[in-house]
Length: 183
Image (cartoon, rainbow, N blue to C red; front, side, top):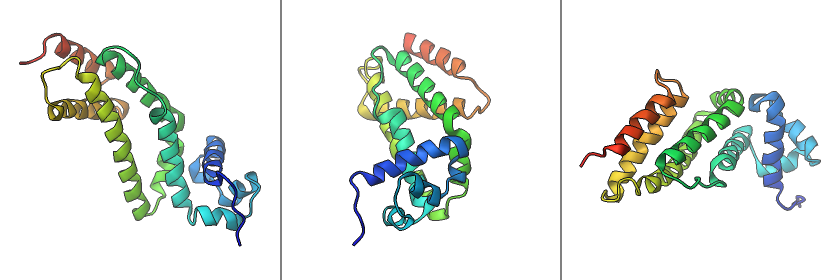
């Protein structure tokens, strides 16, 4: 019977994040991870039968650490948007090379799963933005607020991916829009 260790899955994820800070996820070796966690390689495979499955959980945990365990600061939507942009930029700057490179090596099925998990995280952040917009647009329906929030989130991603415009331009536009909301 395999040896079951409490919270081993979480320990594996955390240790994989730690190891990837130096060698990147693409350079992460399951054998090294097992050694670092003081378990047999077979035990690791009981939890993660493939490196893809581990990488998916590591990336998901990384983004959860960045956003899900934190709450938007108090203030208007601009304060919240500034915070979200700063958090996203910091997170992407911290791990972009390692995670993006690792994602390119995932199997097609794992890439689909990664997209699904990413969509869940984006939906969570978009809902947070919609709630923040409610004070600036109190007469709008939930659907309208969700549309505005989705637009803002997509625009933030565009700024982060450097699609030809800067966050400061988006912020100025939003500031003007909030000062003179359309009826």
